[in-house]
Figure 1 (tube, one colour):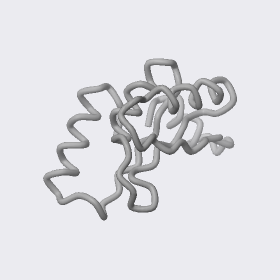
Figure 2 (tube, one colour):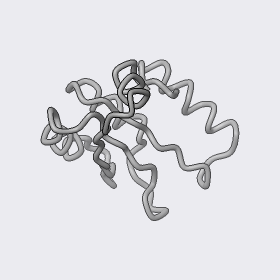
Figure 3 (spheres, rainbow, N blue to C red):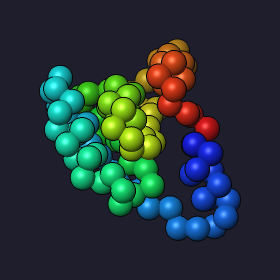
Figure 4 (cartoon, rainbow, N blue to C red):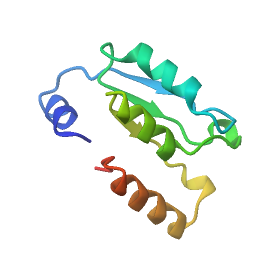
Length: 102
């Protein structure tokens, strides 16, 4: 969580988030366009991970694009679809992209 969100949660203020579902194809344009609509209205966007057990673009990749447009991403990692090594790889990749996993 970023310092901004951490401070907001600790002060017991309302934190407003929205959920975005990654596309089922390779082009991130649709999720970026949706994230732009939320900019300035929410504190962060929650990016689901393979919603309904359907393969979708990685939430880590979506988070990278969403962070580039100035929206704070919260990445879900669904344990159902990964082993320990896969989870560790996802967390290392998110850290490399500058996306916090606090």
